[in-house]
Image 1: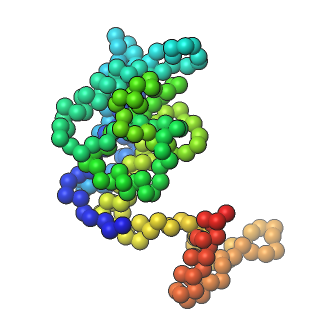
Image 2: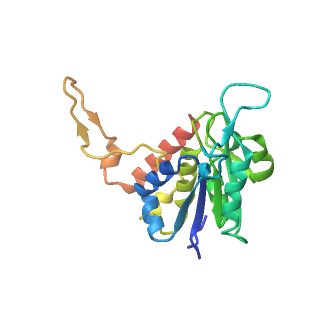
Length: 229
């Protein structure tokens, strides 16, 4: 996929009960530089601000009984409305994180790159009122077959994965290779002497041979082996 330098800043909006989680990671990661260079913008919307009553309640007991609390539709609707008023006419996609959603992959990251703005709805507690998925979200995404306490970590994963395809986000173009990390990597020392062991732990000979053709072939073989396992 040929990367084209964006004509405008890629915007990410995150609706969450814990905006500090998103903001702290952005500040301490590569995304901070991307924000500074106006390649991306990451805007957090505190769901609590749209809660009910003095205590800004955003959740309630599930109909039909059951344990835990469910995030109500009204605060989510109002949070989305607050974003919509600021960005009328943008090419936008609203995403809800869910274990039953479509599995997020590199191909999905490329697909979502086409949108001007992505809005992420981060659930908490026992989930979100199903009407959010039915009437407000454009799609549901899953980052894996496991359960987390909320959607903040998935949001950060998706934001970074997409941002990596924006020219200028990374320092070197070779780090964009999709098989990056699919083969083993080593660094100095070439031989590591372990106390109490006779045999050292060595780097494969091919990697210190200086033969670039052999190294490339070895990496290809290792990558193919890992994919088949």
